Image (tube, rainbow, N blue to C red; front, side):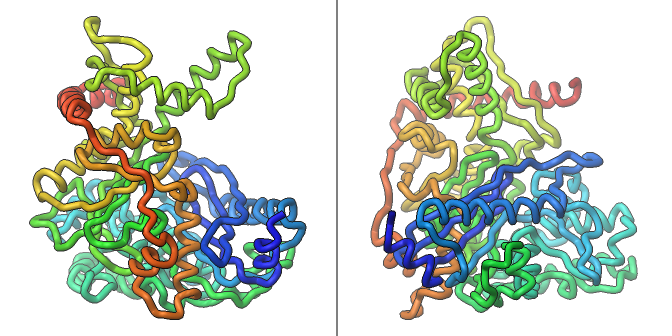
Length: 531
């Protein structure tokens, strides 16, 4: 038993971070040195209801309480003690989407997640109005789409927030949002570190003829940057998190953040000219800019770090889900032969086999589109594998094609930043399930972006660890360091992880693959149209 960790928990010095991912809610406790000492989780899935992807409010709270109960169980098992008090808490979640509430704090329509692509008309009109790329999944797109559809609930909106903002609000009574998550509602002005005043005014003028009883700032959360006071856990909030009543109220909470921001923190990528790539169920890259881009791009989202620096984000709705489905098929085959299946070994063997494939995958092609993919203009998706009779069809090329396909859209978006805008990047760090097999995902992404990719040992801890670090930044920063200095000097202490550089052959092969990929996009569209 780790007696030091036990003492930290019993004395109330541990910090809790909880992140709501798309397939898992994860809770992590960290010690005085920012190291994880216990964790709990809860697996969940979004549901397609009336054509829209959602999680129910009941499932959100059940998931949170079960995840926390699993954490308590782990603490009891590992340290023979319980969590009675905490030094700080942080919540993060999937960004964007639409959570609208009335004055009684009742949700007006089911939570619409980032995955929905029904907001095309609204996003296009707002992008033109603001002269700024407004993605389909942003909260303002969802809101304006409801306005365009004359949805009856819009007049009753009193509060509009994100999932992280909602949880934080219910546990503290504070209707606030971290600046990174807020920048996925409506654009944030990096100078003021709050919603862009000109865009807010334009939106209010746009919807004024509807006669709604609110202005935009009336219904949006107040914006906070990392380190600012975001309230404390109320008695009611403590019961919402821990229905047993064991957890005491009163500890501070940091500003709630989106999973993009916590990914930046967990990979020490909040400094200009650094970036990270998160690759799991979905994928996104974040590069912290030295200056704004020369013009808006439909494929590039502009958000901010948790301390308000401008970030260019390429977000892809799909990443590893199709690979997981194929690995599941190989698992079935092994079971059919009576072979015992170790999933870690199966993934590792198949991923490493991909390294033996041709640099261009022998002509094989894979689309991982479980859902639509806005970057390539697909409103819906169909997972698809393509080959011609003369292609080199073997297991190595098959796996490599799927690993390439998982980050194909990410490459298309980043080519704009790296080739057209000539953005400079000193360090790019990968994290997420795509990088779990050492060296493989790194090598594929290095080839895709023609940039060295680092992976840290801690990157697997993910966003729950990242939001715990942000809670620590608020409560463990007596010197008043900036967030980038706090991460560099206190948390990571110079550790930049293990780096893999691209090879010329891999880069050339990926370029050939992506040209075929772009040329065959009409085939993917045809699959959507006819099935």
